[in-house]
Image (cartoon, rainbow, N blue to C red):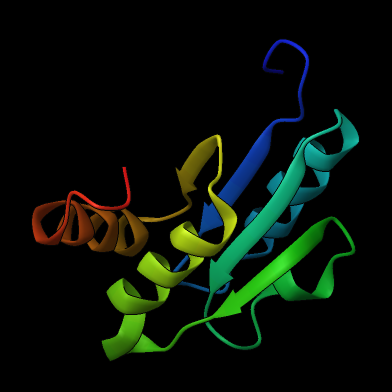
Length: 99
């Protein structure tokens, strides 16, 4: 945890894997505040561990992630799969504003 504060984690997923919800629950169990960017129907949205949710669809991934980053200002961003990693790289190439 950051000294004197809460760890704000944003999980970014492009697939609907149950593991992502397990990761969210584990982070919340140690006191992190967990947000998620994921496709509609993601297991991340069915767990009470995720307090902030951003549903994004295929072609709008990068824009949705950019909006989520601007709205949440997370301490840590965790890509949960290869598609999320690629989208975050695309966002990095597109803009310096979110860092």
